[in-house]
View 1 (cartoon, rainbow, N blue to C red):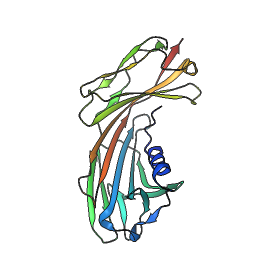
View 2 (view 1 turned 135 degrees about the vertical axis):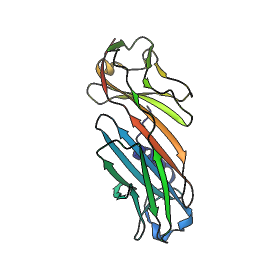
View 3 (view 1 turned 90 degrees about the horizontal axis):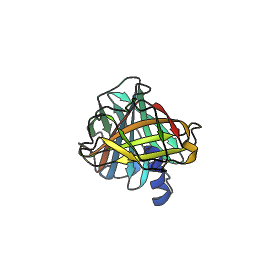
View 4 (view 1 turned 120 degrees about the vertical axis):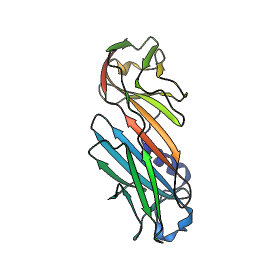
Length: 226
């Protein structure tokens, strides 16, 4: 099962590569800090979530004053869980782009702009389908662009099972759910949505890093039969 939640991906990396004991950013070489940014728009809530994470190799960093990071001039707040450190802020509106500004302990400022991918939505003309047959889902919105991929997410009625189908071919506008890919626990009302992702390199930074942008469609409920 594929899980696109960035925090879980970071946690997996830490479990493999390091004990994930964070370091203070003032204690490392400022030119060797890697920076990752993300922007997620969730159409169901009408919210834009932003986050920033800083790394020295595979070790997460806590920013130490005067270092700080902002999104559209709003200070991001530290969030720490199991040794994972990131900085987040949620805006209660759709933002087509967000400007991140990171100032390191030496007073240098690096600016990066994250742009939201194009809208993607579930076609609500289909209201039910059989899990025992191949089913093609065509989404509403642009086809897959370069440096993009699309996930279709299925959540069981009890919320305990999640299944993903991915599409990475440039120009594609649909995903194929193969027969019996969904288990019997998905029979009934299933919550479905699309997620469009785009990843690019930093525009400015002390070293390397990525900008991940994603658009989460509204959720549609469909009936899954045997």
